[in-house]
Image (cartoon, rainbow, N blue to C red; front, side, top):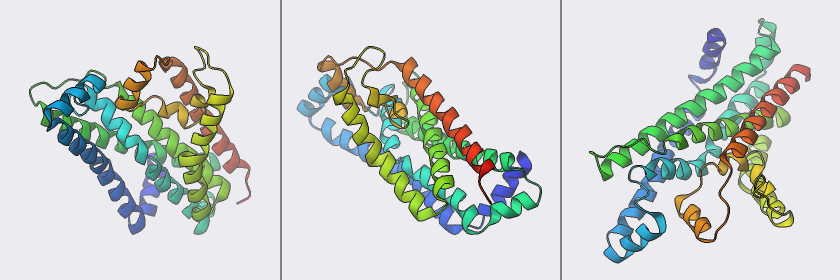
Length: 273
């Protein structure tokens, strides 16, 4: 596997577009949370607004322990960029015919696709590390002597979500093979189509304890529900809406990961080169 990852590294190490997008993506993680932090500081600059915010949120969202949830939730809205990076890695193989050369050189089809999925995990790990450091940074700004890892499970949930985005991107890359089409469909699905379908199904079908709105268990939505925005979460509680079932959400999230993996693997193993 290490040898295969070295081959992947040789493919991207001089690929300027990939690295520019990767750097912009990582900077966007910090930037998105800095915007959120700045809004928080403006609100709390007013005593009355700050007291109202405390009533709604139960405390500053960028202070420990809420910072873990706030940072991961805010970053989840730009995770589609990680999918863009994965689509570029996959579709470039078809554009430059390097996948054929790898197979000719002795790499099996299974090894090839498993390596791509591993790259998705690596991108997710790097994203998670940056999110962790970002949350730690803003939390320490609020109170450097009161560091807390309570609620840090949201970092794990973010990693699962990041893997879901990258593996879904691999799937779309394998289906469409052209970067423009794959990126367009991926963006439409993750940002619009699934959200609309989830809303329709949640309104059309009755809710139950085990299925708190069936739309919440769609591929991307199943992980999005693991990272609720603190403001929206408090509003839901005030409206007496039932809490999400974490066990169910995680079960569906892992099931989709397995599906993404085996469908992508099967497709590449059976497709014509």
